[in-house]
Length: 119
Image 1 (cartoon, rainbow, N blue to C red):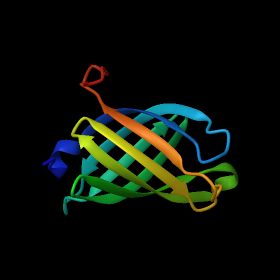
Image 2: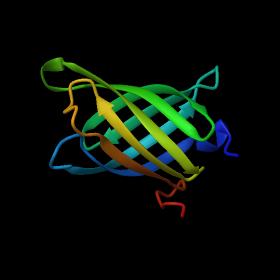
Image 3: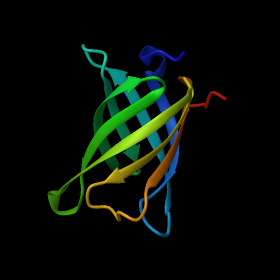
Image 4: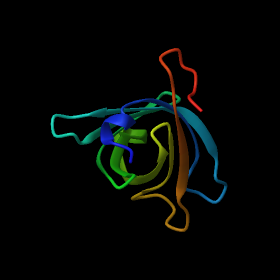
C-alpha cells in the first residue's frame, strides 16, 4: 500500500485540457505535506502556476486547485489521481467554468533530483 509520504516529490506531467480538442500540455507538479499530513500541490505549466490542497486515501489523491487567469480572474477545479505506484499518478480533472461535456486528463511521472523520470 502506498503511504502519503511516498507521494512527496517532483513529477513531470503530460495532460490534455477540458475541451473537445483535448489540447495537450506538459509541465511539472510538486507535492508536499503540511503539518496535518495533507497534500500541498504546485503545478507549473508554461508560465502559469496553479496551487492546490488535498487529501489521500486508498491510493486515491484528491486535490482542489486554483489559479489566476486572464483579467486576474481566479479559476477553480478538482483533480482526482489514481496512484498506480508511488512514481506514477493517473488522473482526471474539471474546472468550475470548463466545458462540462469533457474532463481534462493528466499523467504524472516522479522525477529524480536530476530531472530524469523514474520508471
